[in-house]
Image (cartoon, rainbow, N blue to C red; front, side, top):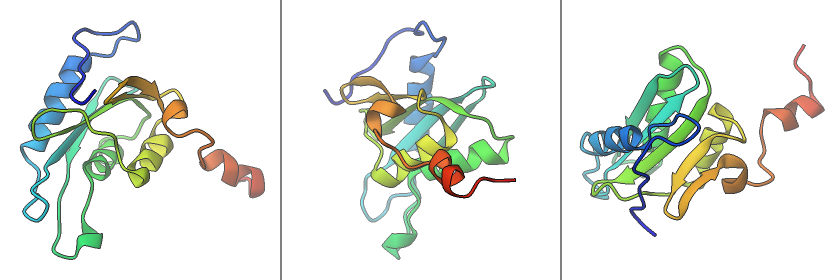
Length: 145
């Protein structure tokens, strides 16, 4: 159901309400003059940091940046790490499912075990993106020395 929310820190130590609050805050900072569909996202990094982002639209629609792109940029700009948990919302705070490109970003910057709050509840990236294409596939063909 859209807008599903977890109300307490889960057994994995993830403060879902804090992630939700940060994602909602970021949606309020989005630049969405064309679609009028602001999106915010927040993610918990394996070192305890919270990184976040918002969508930034452009008149050349292909140049628009999803909120997850901004979050991943912040992740790398502030020291890198692995995303443990992510929540993406619209301007009302309702849970959104990331687009396909952003699911790939979350896989790449997280792990198969990274948790994603979805409109139907919390799922691992392995469940969200089964048979994902990632670094392991590339390394199997052309290992990095």
